[in-house]
Length: 335
Image 1: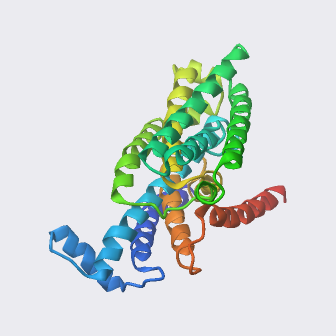
Image 2: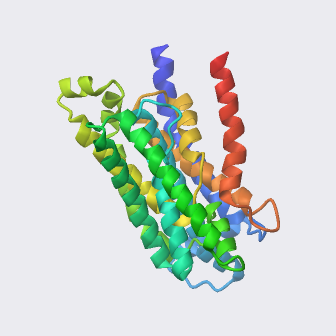
Image 3: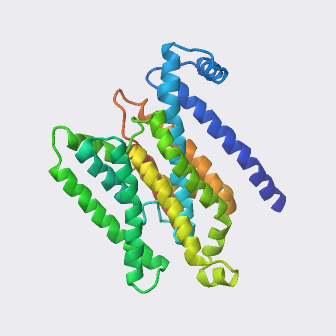
């Protein structure tokens, strides 16, 4: 039995890597404008070799689909990693990346930026600032209770999230209904339509940095899930470890929301899928969640730009896929 389990753990990683690579290439030739798989591989090879390319296929693959697919991979991996970390940190399988109000805060920052100047770098900067500000408010509210516990953090997150959602609603109410309001509404539903290499330069470092911190601390999440007393007995400061992981998750969530809008369910559902594949040990769960989340988000993006003539918002598709899956999971656990 142990040999079979060990063999499964060894096999799962190359399978996930090959699956992710295959889905990545698949996304480059799928869409309303079809490019053959051989054509995609030829374009990528010529690009690696520095050979000039001026065809329509090369422009579609290199300037539109490649940055979009890379962004989907980063956001999917980041949100799934954040979900796995939060679920272990708060010892609750129903926790998602927006538990501390980060998503709502980042969304309000971007909405405010759209109102003031349109969707440009200022809106993105405001998104990150308000995402981080939300976490600061959560910690300040939590400290008012006398101690920064998991329960006080979650309750403070609910308060801040409600506040930021109210500010978003107020912003939509005062927005110009002919120009600003449609832009805000569409952006809040999530989309990769604005993906380009400039945007990738902005979000790649914060997302990868956050994932790296969580990956480095993944073994401590196992200890944190056993309670603060166990952490202290093993020489781990639970407050500092909580803080480091929460800051890393905030960085990932704020950068993701800044780039693509609000995309739900990924951080909630994907860790459960990864948990079914590799178990509850965060040493394996965190990387499995990242690989699975990246693959899932790329597939959803392909669906969003392929199933209809007009592109569907990503947030709608993730909810349509995630909600039924979670309902089935809930039903199976109740049997």
